[in-house]
Image (cartoon, rainbow over all chains, first blue to last red; front, side):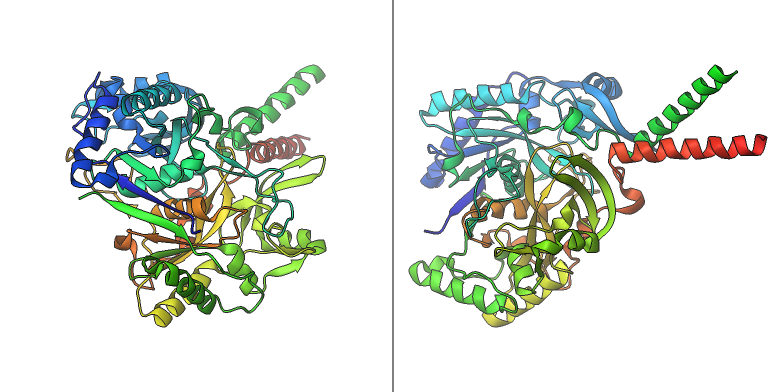
Length: 269
Length: 269
């Protein structure tokens, strides 16, 4: 049997405004879409991949564009790396959601003029609410992944990654599993949630106005609502070998050595 | 019109041995598979996603497992970060392919007993050869992405990424484009090649013995053979804010300050 899945965009969603009910809007858009093509009606085992932008808008995470810098500071747990350029300072930070990304994920594209948009405060909670609502409204077991567009160390550009989730198994944990030859696998934990997030971006895109995609054929990854959320995919703290940018860590080491030398020299005086 | 694509695995490929002709083997497997389901015959605009492991095997990049450490050293341009643990030293390095990854990508899973496998020496060249061969054999314009499984800073686990490519547009460059509201997009360069690589992993997996997937529905990203290869997705050099692990950069800074202090103290003596 050939393993297979397909991915398509949900069309016809309106521009999302604060306090809009995403459950109803998504269910309505799917219903309209499936009049023309009944195959597009949602089924148990489907995974919905939702751009964080519409979640943030529905949760009224908009701030005046003039307060963008304050919003970045408010959503920053710590600065990981920064680089000054002629237009200002480019900052990579750890956000309160545990993500490491530019400008704390605050964005001004696809947002009304004069406003900036923060990430959902708790994307896993947003995903659980959306998942529970759609499961109840439609009477089927679907999974939810909320995505944002994030840069990577050592690679150009950005890909979409899972920042919130509910009802989806996030990783295919192969630690202890054997390969096709029966030998232990060294690569251990495939992050399927990020792979699904990226796949969905291929139909959602940034310019198409399609903020939600459906992935069908991966029902084996759909779980109970209370499965761990995407926050568990973030790696921060002692485990993080790239806690600071190289320039930042170099400066910390340099300053530490100077401070030690000074303290020794004070003792000797 | 609903944007849509689908992904499936090519089944029935034999275990790949040195000097096997991947063009013939893949074309044969597709032909067999499409007897049962004619839709699975390849068409112009399909993108084939190929696990680097079978490319390496066909290019005879196997080394004795006892020479694994020497092979890692040979494929390492520089050490980015390392961490000593009870079983040895875990090294993240920049490989000669421009990738930053653990153990220079040298792997012992899904490899015959007693052997280890290096990455293809030039994955873009491998992809071009495979793409040209399949285009000629089948008389259709397909694209090729060669993938490997790579960890990320700040995220747990690994995802599949594009390490070689031919005939595929790698990024959707949105610099200068407008969002759905007509405002300039800040997020600029969606790396569709990595998103396609990850999508394909969802049917290939590590335990299934399926090393090649087909992606249909993204023909807009299939290009001429001479499009830039996946090496262009690597970010090394001055542009890389995470050129060293935090501990390594800290130590460099610390040692630089000590050396400066010593040189000053010598001058003063």
